[in-house]
Image (cartoon, rainbow, N blue to C red; front, side, top):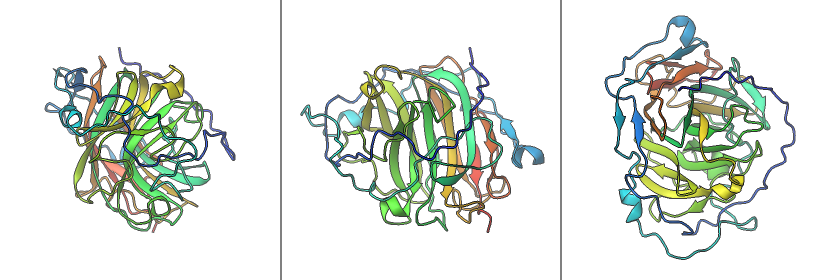
Length: 348
């Protein structure tokens, strides 16, 4: 049964977050666990002939629109596939995860975390030291994983201490200030990555506490796909997160490249109830001139997109409900249960 619970968000003004610490990974390959085997998880895909729906003027201007998956297809294919990752040269050492004293490439200067959008937010939100704008596809269900396809872009006018990104997040609550959260996506973050190109990232929250990009316990496994690596703009990548063999695994283009040990949450986070795929802009003030996606409004042709949404270990069909917090700067269009377009030029 679809949870579809309406959870009220207590909007908190957070000036100091009791975090896990600015720890990071050394970027070395570790192998405390084997990549999950293929065929171990059943996916639910609503991508078979969905009905494309362009939201009305009022919806794309800041309300919400929902799309429905086919509701009839349950595939046994494992997407993301694990085939490539199991032959990806995994090491056999049993070294522990990254420690606080290790430093990670791409995690030395970013000042704002990636924060999953609050539920029901109708305007951009200033929290965690920055002001955020979102275009979000969200579903309430019970699942052990999800994946989406996202167009990798190089948005312009990103503030030196801000970012523009697209991501997939899984949470056990839609209150980011208390939730357990895992995230994967691409980001343009000049402070964190040293350039204005999209980079692969992972992030997680523990009981609402921030950690850090690409580290703080994330165990890198793949030698060909690494957290923090640069990605080609204009290409579409497949991003996935799945709980398997006691860990939360991260996938890029069907490669299981690393994982967050479930022990980080002391056994309290083995499934997710809130799935969000979204564009996010972080800047030091509102309105922002930072582009989202490729800078084209989501309601127009040629915009960036999130598509191919799938669930794993769920009985519900994929069914996004889409909303925008700052529709005069960033909006959406072409909504289905498994896809939507998104983006915008910002306020300039």
